[in-house]
Length: 473
Image 1 (cartoon, rainbow, N blue to C red):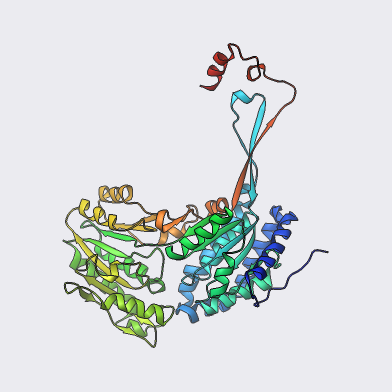
Image 2: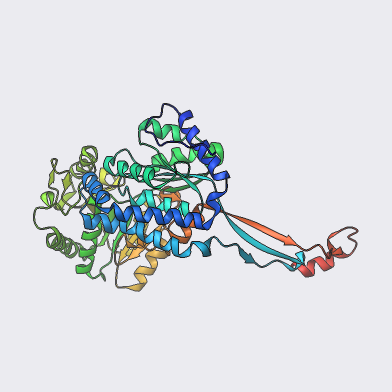
């Protein structure tokens, strides 16, 4: 009888964590996760549970981040459902061995590539989209046939509790195990050997993950962040620009890894953009955003104070063109437009992760593109322009993970494209087929017949190089 383990919240050392992972590895080696039918059943169970416990999930998101049911569904549960639907639809095709061509030099042979799961994958998720960024990579890992060790953030307390409950009630703990979040747990997990590490969070912690993975030569996917630029050209439709940036910058109160971070605005349209942005905000949220329950709040007082500090500490030439009000009781900060900022201002020194819009003006596109060289490769880039030449230059010349033209954020919701960054914004990508690939090793396999041995490849070689050159050109 296979040994069972019970999900428990009591861990005293890395050895306790390793014991759980060892049992998960043993379960993986039984081969049951290699079955496509098994994977489909697990994905269906997850979808059914989420549908039956939607109210509980949405309530947890509201308690942690102040998200309305609409925002919680649109930015979290809905994206998980979409990933589940695509994976369930495509899993048999993705998991099928694929025949590939074989060079004539290996006559007579055939070649196939076999998708193979990696083993036990660790998914270390953040607090800002605590359900989506935990479950989407977990869905991809299960689709690829892996066991999953999930560790949600301890900062988003209520959703982390929901995820622990979900894992206990849906999955065999040898297949999916949810570890409780704590400072010690983070350290212990990095001492344990996994077959894959998938992390979403800050570049600082990303370096620690990479260092720990190097010890065991573990495959790593890092989804980080950075200062994502938003170009606004004088050809932009300012009304739409204001509406869409107001929408995107207020989602989750700006606590989004692909939120537009700073705004490169053509000097001719700065005033028009600010007015359009202000009009859109008032239309969406009224005049008192800090007490509007449809506007999400900062995750906690620490991040509230951090973002307020970015607003308040600026050079003497910088001014607040709009916004700046805040309420510590509600943890809400009114979207704040800052003009006259410089690279020395704190707001330009780190990823903002809040509802602040620092504006830098430009005369020429060369000047605007050159400004982005002050920062490491961002996770996202945005350009608002009707001028197609401007669109194309930004997309071609600015390094980034992914982009949206004439809108913000929504490129990540298309799971027919991979989502990820490079350099300081991450390593690797996921979503859809790219997510399946993220948790898969492809075994290249050549099968050769035994009825014939080509004499050209064996000694004596004599003048055989002439034939070889003909065959391999």
